[in-house]
Image 1: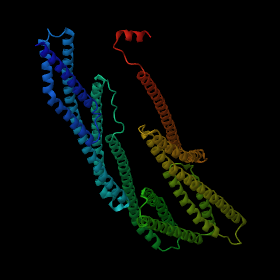
Image 2: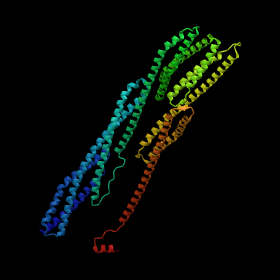
Image 3: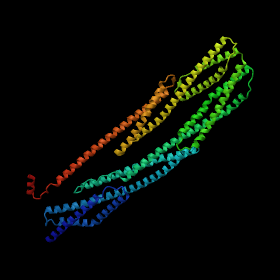
Image 4: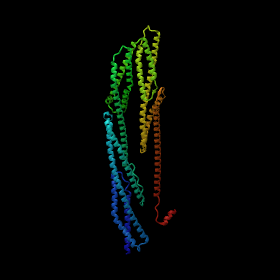
Length: 613
């Protein structure tokens, strides 16, 4: 009987050793399962490995139970044959086997459940990303077709509704992208949770394994970043296309309205002009005076309504500025031709009325007596001087008001030119008194001086208009470029690698340096306009200059802050890399020192001697 119990103890002890060795191998398999793969094939292999481990544990459970039963049996029946320490050692090893098997089974179940969930999430995310990428490809193709058709003015109105639907669809997919981003983040959070479980298990093993780190730049994260960048580019292009189409539609509608208004006015004024021109000249000075007054009134009406032709010309220029670069020359000519025809008809009407007025004026002078004609001539000069004093105003820096000033001044100058021919043709016979000759010479001298002053003032108005147009064009272009550059600076992210972000910031700085001379020239041009003599309504230009300076100041401040932030980030990253290298070097040297230590002796005396030494 004692011999049998000793053999049973020996067999049980050997079996416990085998089972502990087996559970150690199982724990090693679980510990080396690795972090969840972001590739479907890899995570599927991990699922199969965990299922295999679980099956192995389940199939081995009977052997473990049998071994534990033997331990329990020896503990109950071997008290007389074995010492208490031997029984306690056997029970301790049995308890260790049971706890490790139970824990391995629990960990395997937890890992399998989590990894299966992650696999399903990965498959779902892949499906959603592939679907979103397919939609992006189709949306880009649709956008390119709409961009190509932008120059076709006849179909722009019909395409605006389709474009609004397309923009709404693109904006609606922003929620899909946000949902995918949140799902990916949750997926990585679940991965981190799995790694936390895995690392806790690895550090609790007898040999205490090191932590498994998270995968950097995983494929799913790269794909998400790629579709995010593509979607942002698509959204930016769609918004730009929508703005361009809306602007083009508005400019085309304004152009059509202006041309139709000018056509309608010309159709209404043409019969009245034809009636005046068809009326024969009379020999009665009173009737001639009446005819000349009617002609001049109609001429003034034609000149004042010249703004309709100017509006058509301005709307044409505004439309041509927003046309796409690929617009054909035939399309441009079809837009320019109606305005050119309107201008020709208008100039023809004005010239006919002016010629009629000059002819009537000559006829009137010829039919009156010399004294009466001279008095009329002097009154004409005085009236012209009064008109010049009345019309003379400082040049307005509001373009519409300045155009009105120029139009009125041109009408006044044409009136002077028409009077000039009459005055120069007026001659006195040799038998008239010297007083009348001197009076005629004084009238001619005053008229020439008045004409020179009017020409000088007209040149000043034209020069001011040219400078104002140049400033407005440069201001519009600069405002757009600075705003675009500001958006690029504000949208710059620190997710780039240092070299990529440096290149991005360098491109922005190069663009800013290119714009700086244009900015200074535009500001100086605006300040020169404000400081001119004989100008008024300078508030608009002053506000534009101030607005441009504020935009530039904000751009300089923003680029400086971005550069400083990037510099700080680079310094922190370099400091982190340096400290990490130092820690790694210290760990490697410390591991070498530990590996060189002598083994621990089981002889107490020898161990005490080593300790003393």
